[in-house]
Length: 198
Image 1: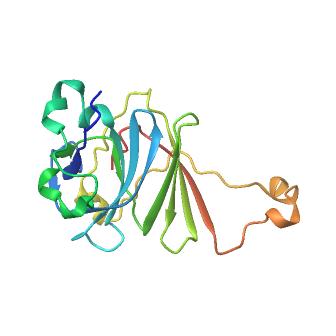
Image 2: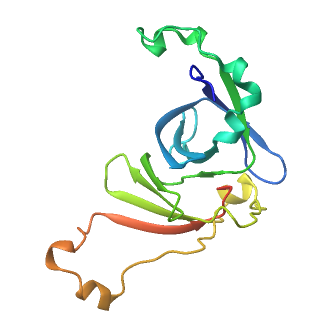
Image 3: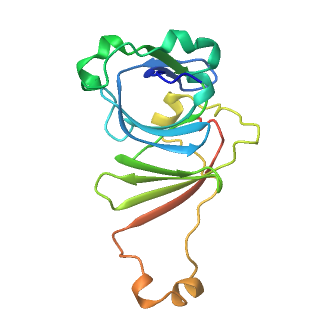
């Protein structure tokens, strides 16, 4: 453990399919939350992406970012009395490239994320606070990449939803009057492969 360790993460590229098609872009971090002690869940915005295909949900294993062997490489030499954005050159940067552990959040302007590693769930909230997607994540399972390419997706093939849940009528009737969801709020539940492949 290093008391002055600090690392900036630069998101380099994401592989979109098993054909090793790689798309490079510039990403800004909209929100980040610890999923568990070893993983951070991040919502990224592709600054040059198409509308509706510009948000990504990424599971960032901290073991890929930092380990004790690299500790001297990540010594922070700046000062704690100044803002970090004023001393960018003093912050060591690691560029990450992802083949797994991410998912394209289509048709949603995702803005916020919350995660619970114990329950293996991550929730994404839209920027207008009206849409919520709940992702069930099972990191222990083996995951396979989607064999489809971007051309197939653009041709109209929709990604398969493994699991989507909604309240049945009997469950909805048993809810207290104040617990009824407003009709403009949409909640989706999806089960994801652990790599969050697209």
